[in-house]
Amino acid sequence: MKGKQRLNEGKCFYVEGQVLGEWFKYLGEHKTLKFENDCKTAMSDFARFLIESKEMTEPITGESILSDYDTKGVRRWNALISSYLSELKTKKGLSHNSAVTRTTRIRSFFKKQERPLKPDSAIFQREEVPKRFHDFEHFELSRMWKLGTIQEKALLSFMSNSGLRISDALTVTKKTIQTAYQDALAKAKEEGRNEPELMSFQMTTKKKKTLGNPFITFECYTTLVDFWDSNPKFKDNDFIFPSEQGKSWTEPWANKVLENSWKRAYPERKDLDVTVHSLRSYCITQLIDQGSSEIQTKRLVGKKVPSDMSVYLTKMQLETAYRKALSKFVFGNGNGQVKTKLSDLENALKSVEGENAILKTRIDELQRGQMSLNAKMNENVEATKRAITKITEAQEIYQKAKTQFEELIKDLEKRVK
Image (cartoon, rainbow, N blue to C red; front, side, top):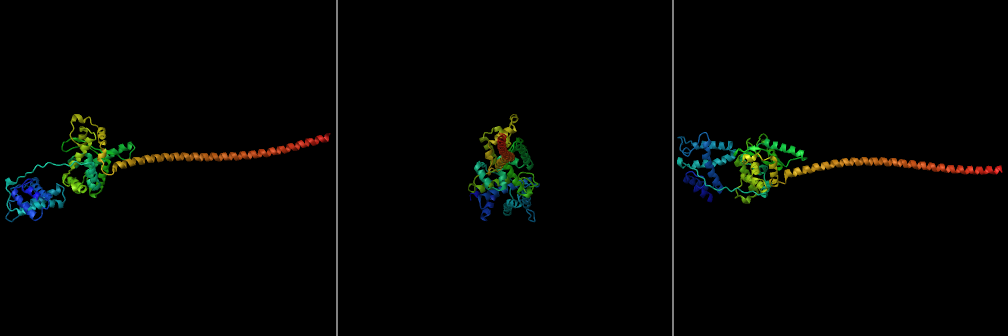
């Protein structure tokens, strides 16, 4: 098998190559190692055990591994492996089952190996293999988002949005993000919007001890909140990537989460090496491609900026530069941005409805006034008709009286003659 051959030739980690070659042959015959990755993992675990055991209270060396059997047959390495198992759980944040898996093959080596290792043969050598960071495309991240779990979405969104190193991202707290959201929300309210599109915060990076001013989208914020709410055990943990043990994630775990997301979205492309660092590279690439200057990009992702240039960088300049690439940092259905736009439309609709209500009230008042006026006009018309009728009747009475008077005059004139 190619993997076994590489390890037997000592091209990965090796300690006394012949001894380890026999061990892997033994494991292969018993079908413990089924895949090339199993070979790599087993040898790496063995090397890490010898290297990291130096951090224990009682260091372990090549000479002490097997040389100090006591007369009762108690093997010192057994206790050291148990201590290493505890270290994996407490310092590395692994679950009990994962820690046991990491130490099982190490234990099997010592059970088979019956002669002590020589001090000068406990040498570790690693073949320099170029790292192949995969250059993510937006459509790939969108697919990973669509098929990912809530913790995978949270990692993908925050790391690609902020562009921070994973070592810095794991120190960011919920309080920092929530404060950034509240500040952005207040600004959005002043501009007549219900939710902000962007929010930013400042932090000092661990590696360079320099100031970073990363931005995240509203979609990223809502995803983080959903992730925090997904497990009651995260409630009292202030890290944005909380573990059930009350700590933040470890870097290996973050890479594992991203790797699982990649394999689920692209199972046919498992040969590519995807790491969280690739998300940082994606962020920097998008910013530069959309016109952000080198100085602006460095400040946004926490890279060192010359002190004589940093004084000219303002938050408004950084936000303008980030907004140019905003569409590249949204991977779902728009989520936060869509919610924000819908909220703005809802506000506009409510405003129109309010104005319509006022206009309707005025129209109702005018209609009521018109009805009142019509009623009064009708009353006046009826009164006029009644007056005309009375005038007509009076005229008829007058004509009758006039006729009678004229007849009376004529009758008197006849009598006088």
